Length: 345
Image (cartoon, rainbow, N blue to C red; front, top):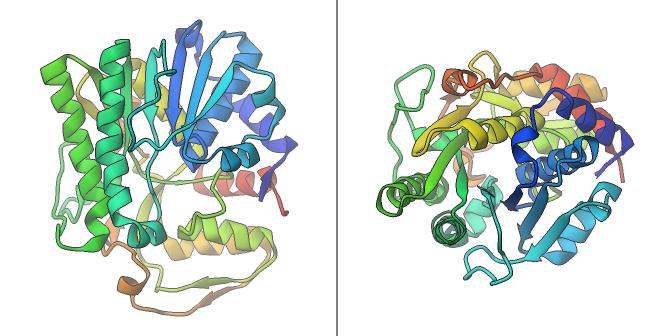
């Protein structure tokens, strides 16, 4: 799938309503810039840079230059103050990363197929990668935002999960490589803040969807958008009753920026709207209707496809809303925009 001209206008329209003045003449580093979150955030910032003449310098870090060339092949990257650095975040950072005011650590394996295949790398990107970036924040006297996940809440009795709620995660399950390493990285951020006076903030994403998903992303919503856009029927491999909070990718990136600007040192913020929760089967029905395809069921055992066993994951977003964030897109509207923003290759 390739993002089209409509996507550019869509992002430009979105950033019209955002206050970007705090980024004037600043420098911001994004890890995972070729991923779903990192690429969308870079798109927003670079287009805002053009629109408002912010003179914002953006450094993008990713593991593959070839992948970056394919994903970032848009004119707003070619004619802007954007620098890509090929870097595995688990390795010591290259010396040419200088003058950074803000760091957004969004580099992470984020979908089940990769958790199962690369559990060690999943953990180390979250823990060692975060440590490397915290050391950079000390050196540059910058503020670091760590992109975490609602999965850190584990299996919790509460209906709606707020920032001070915590449940059970089985540390002996392979699937726990993701939530447990996210939790460890959160604690590492707090520890660096206390011991080395580093300004850190954590955001916990709900399930994010939108047109910036990667070709490797096998999460159910991304896969269903890809299939439906191509005119192929959908197959749901469960009863679909699992309920999740969903956030459109541009709303998620806006939440990151608000937390980066206004978030309190050592605090965590959910990027979610408790009113934007839906079951997977209802989400699939919407996607099938938009794409005019059929939805079929093929039940399998979840343990073989690496899915979490948590049946309900609704997150409270009131803390971030108090900083000025709001979720602009209803789920159906965000899915419609996703279809409009993508062309079939």
